[in-house]
Image 1: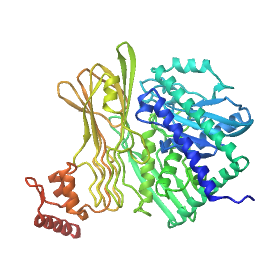
Image 2: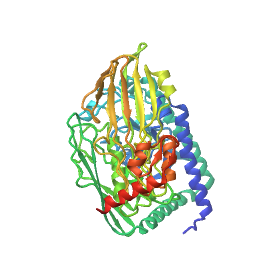
Image 3: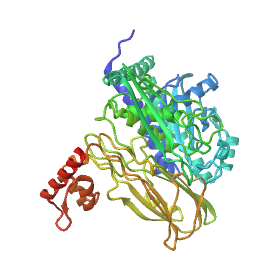
Length: 578
C-alpha cells in the first residue's frame, strides 16, 4: 500500500479547493441575473469518478450538500453513457435529487485520456422558470406542476454540441430568457474551467491522484469521527415552529432528534408535521444539507469539505412529512423550512455544546418576488434579504451578514433602482431588535420598497409568531413584520406566508422587517460598558438598556448611572429569587 505523504495530500486538497473557488468566481463575474451576480445564490464543487464530492467552493452551504444526491441520480441514470464534451442539466426535486425548480444543476463529466477523471458540479438559482408567479416561487402553489418548467436529468451538451431544442424550450418557458440563458452559460463556463484545472492535477500526479483522493475522503472521515467522539453520547431534541400559512396560520412543527453515539451522529425528523398543500415542502436533499451544515459549523475548521466528512452522519425524515414530501407536492418556497431545520438542529446541539452553538437567526432569506411589464419588457425582482445571526458564547450576533446556513448577499440598492421600477427608501437596522443576553443577538434589518408602477408581488417570510430562540438564558430576538403602506399612509399587516399574491399601486411602500437574532446568556450579566457602547451606536435604546439589561444611562450625557444600575440589577435578582 502506498504511503501517503501529508504535504502532497494538502497540496492536492488545496488545488481542488482552488478550482472550486475559481468556478464560483467565474459564475459571479459572468452571470446575467441579480440573483446569481449580486445575491450569489449558487454553488460549485468537484466530484470524483464515483460522484463523491472532493471540493466545494466558498458558496452556499445549504445547496452544496445536495451534490451527493444529484450525483447518485446521474450515475444511476447514465452510467457509462457519458463522453467527453457532454454536459448534463436538471432541476427536478423528485427525479434527480434537486431542491426546487429555480435551482438548476449543470454537471460536466471530465475525461483525461479517455478515462473518467471526475465531475464539475454547479447549481444556481435562476430568476424565473415559468409557473404561476414571476420568480417561480409561490407559497400558494399546491403541486409542482404549477411552479414552472421541470427538467429531468438530460444532456444540455452532447459531445460538445449544445442541445438547441432544450435551450429553446427553456427560453420559451421563462419570463427572463436573456438572464436565464446567460446564467446557464456562466455555469457552463465554470465547468469548462474546472475541467482544465482538474486535468492538470490528474496529469501532474498521474496514477497517484486517485489514491490521494481516497486518502482525502478517509482523512475527512477520521477527523469528523474524532470531533464527534469529543461530544457526550446522548439523545438531544430540538423543536421549533414555522409561523403557518395564510391569514389564520396554524403553526407547523419541525422536530429534530439528534443521537450521538461514539463517533456517529443520527438526526431523525420523526414528529415533524406532514407535508402541506403549499410550496414550503422540503425535498429530502435540503434537510440533509441543513443537517450537514449545522454539524459542520460545530466541527473543526480544517476538516476537508469532501464526502468523507458526511460518512459519520445519517439523516432521516418520514415519507410524506414536510421534510420528505411525496410527489407532486410543491416545494418552490422550501428555503424557509431548510433554514429552520438548521436552527432546530442547532437548538438541540446547544443542550450539549452551548459554547459552540449559535442562537436563532432571522429565519433565512425573506423572499419578495415582484414582477410586471416595464418599458415594454417583463421584469422580475427576486429580493432575498438576509443579515442577522444569533449570539454565540464568545461574541454578539452579527448583523448585515448572511446567517450561517445561507452565505448569500443582499442586492445593492443601486442595482435594484437601476434595473427595476422600484425605489429603496429605507435600508438599515432596527434598534432594540437583537435578543438580549450576555452576548446580544444581531439586529434585525429593515428595507422599504416604493413601487413606481402597479406591480404584482408575493412573499415568503417567517419568525413573526415564533421569533429566533436564545441560548443559555438569552432572550428571543424581535419578531419579523411585513407591512404594505398605501400611498395614502394607511398600513396593512401582511401574513408571513400568504396564500395569495398582492398588487401594489404606484406610490405604495412595502416594508420588510426581519427578525432579530437570539441572545446568549443572561442579559443582566452583560457588562454595562458594552451596553453603553450599544446605546451610543444606536443598537440599543436608553429605555431598552434599562428594561432588558438593567443598565441605567443618562440620555443627556450618555453616561452609565452606576448607582441606578446596581439598583436595577438588584431588583431583577430579587425578582428572580422570588
